Length: 137
Image (cartoon, rainbow, N blue to C red; front, side, top):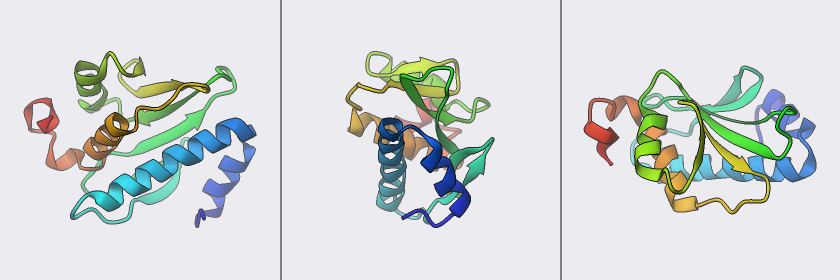
């Protein structure tokens, strides 16, 4: 159940098969946040018209689908952080990336959940990790 009506409306406008995949990513973000000690429930809002999740100690995570790439969807991270650079260093053989801002998924690929949860966790706790080499990985 999405409490923010504006966020819910964005999900409803995605094609059905993409909507299910993005709702899966949403739940993965929420579940991962719940598993991190000291993290409050992430705020769910819209940033640039896309569902966004943020914690007080973290950096925002957005999830979206673009009409220009209908067979893909992505999880976006702040491009002014070391997040995606670190993910590329550790998970270059597992994920596809878009520059220094996103992990991109094909609509038919299986998501490596454990590795993606590590990325989500690093983003949700970024401000307490940013001084660590490789963000503590």
